[in-house]
Amino acid sequence: MLSTEHKAIITATVPILEQGGEALTRHFYASMLRDYPEVKPLFNQANQAGGTQQRALANAVLMYAKNIEKLENLGPLVGTIINKHVSLQIQPKHYPIVGASLLKAIREVLGAEVATDAVIEAWGAAYGQLADILIGAEESIYKQNEQAEGGWRGARSFKVASKTVESDEITSFVLVPADGGKVVTHKPGQYIGLTVKVDGQEQRRQYSLSAASNGVDYRISVKRENGGLVSNYLHDQVHVGDTLSLFPPAGDFVLADSDKPLVLISGGVGITPTLAMLTAALAGSRPVHFIHAARHAGVHAFREHIDALAAKHPQLKRFYCYEKANADGTQPHATGYLNPQQLAEWLPETRDVDAYFLGPKPFMKAIKSQLLELGVPATQTHYEFFGPAEALA
Ligand SMILES: Cc1cc2nc3c(=O)[nH]c(=O)nc-3n(C[C@H](O)[C@H](O)[C@H](O)COP(=O)(O)OP(=O)(O)OC[C@H]3O[C@@H](n4cnc5c(N)ncnc54)[C@H](O)[C@@H]3O)c2cc1C
Ligand code: HEM
Image 1 (cartoon, helix red, strand yellow):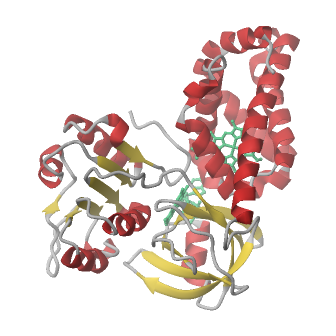
Image 2: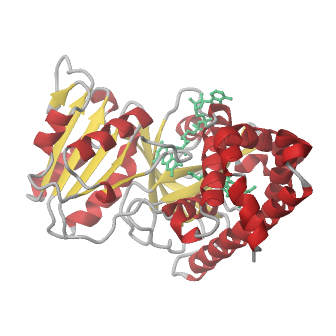
Image 3: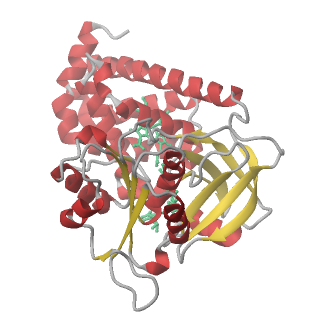
């Protein structure tokens, strides 16, 4: 339990975190990865280089400090962290490493005048409280996954049963357990964690499950990233019959039960979780508007699949937008970037819809503001990042 005095000190540090939180977390990561190289494989180095993970942690620490008197106000932030951690198999033994590195960073960045013994003690206690919450919640998911039918704990070997080129950039892999057992069900929108060795170095990444749950196998659909370590490894070096190590499904960007019309909007490879959501929604009768943006026809994955579903399910309407028109062949419904006028035409007449969207950050920023402008309630808009969460405002 945090004392009243601890809480007062944490609250008093909010202005410091507001100003210097990112400098603190940058220092924290650099020093932790230097002092404890054993945790380096857990972290995606591209997210470190781009600063997104430092910003996500700085934001989480700030939100925690601001809400230290009322932790329930932290809302979905804690769930996102827990799911991310579970997908990467963060363990209780890792928490003291992060705790020690965080206190060290507070001391070194803020200096002895600000980071007094009392401040360090309060932050040590506050960190311990948050760590206990996360460790407890993460363990309960690990246990749940282990005990569920087809479930497991830690890494499990899967064989690549098929490899299908979906576009110039995206390839799907169907993965079946090497032990011949079942797989635990996933909610539409969830992702799996995967650990691979590339050039002798362990790397962990997450991939959304791009097909509905069937208890037998998982499908992921991977975009080849320019200069990306794992995506290029999967595309070029992993073949049918090869083995991959997977952690159980996780994720809180999931299709909630509802009868409202459903709007799924994706840009590029952001289509993957919406495919599983679409299949789940089409099992019922709610109207579904599926909107997809791609740079051009060559990189448009799953068009035939969506067209076939639309032919079979009259409640599904689909719209495609390409940055530029094709010289020939199949044309999109619109060209250029999605804009409010176009989106207004493609949304259901009612704005009382559930909207789920995913794509590159500028795309998501535009979609979020356009949905709000068109009258979709903010609480009915849902999104996820293919990386550490960022602000869309
Ligand atoms: C919840 C979730 C779901 C996801 N679902 C999917 C999915 O369904 N399909 C999918 O394709 N991806 C998905 N991703 C993204 C995926 O996890 C990987 O991030 C993606 O495949 C890129 O990984 P990589 O190893 O190929 O690239 P990385 O090696 O991580 O590099 C990414 C980019 O950063 C650049 N970079 C790397 N290091 C540096 C550096 N030091 N300085 C500057 N730039 C650098 C690289 O050139 C590259 O362009 C998801 C991510 C999350 C978090
Ligand atoms: C109280 C302690 C902790 C807090 C507040 C915290 C907070 C966060 C936050 C905010 C994210 C980003 C979530 C997202 O938006 O995707 C994250 C991701 C992550 N955390 Fe933690 N974390 C804590 C402890 C730990 C520990 C002990 C480890 C293991 C060493 C760890 C490893 C990771 C990793 C590997 C990621 C993903 C990074 C990436 O995608 O590059 N965290 N954490």
